[in-house]
Length: 167
Image (cartoon, rainbow, N blue to C red; front, side, top):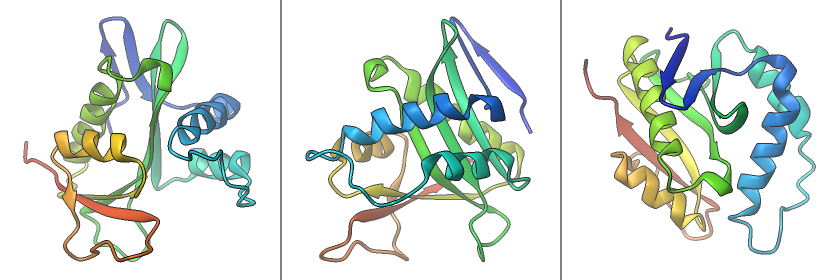
């Protein structure tokens, strides 16, 4: 496990449980950008969900901090029932005020380095079908439609796959 990465003006590190409110706020700001009518009232207790993600022994939540402020986060682990060399990127968000400034690329690179160090060979994720900006970002990073999970009419998410490059 890679503990901390320092990039000029930025640090990528594990999120601390005490930072859960910052995580929830960043998550809400990012999600609001791809729901044109506002966030759906789906009944999810995001505070509890993020607290769980932060304390799972089998998962990681990384954050990108710039000028003392959390501006990006990524949550990943092996999905239930998947092979040990597979990792799922459950959440990946950059604060909208920091888009197109390299934050997402830096955070994604840190994730891939972590996956390589952990012997992961395949990464998967689900992205909202209307989130074309995120889909374009993932495509630039090498993600493709998961052939095992094609998008069907009426699906709310697309399943993407990345072959984790060897070291």
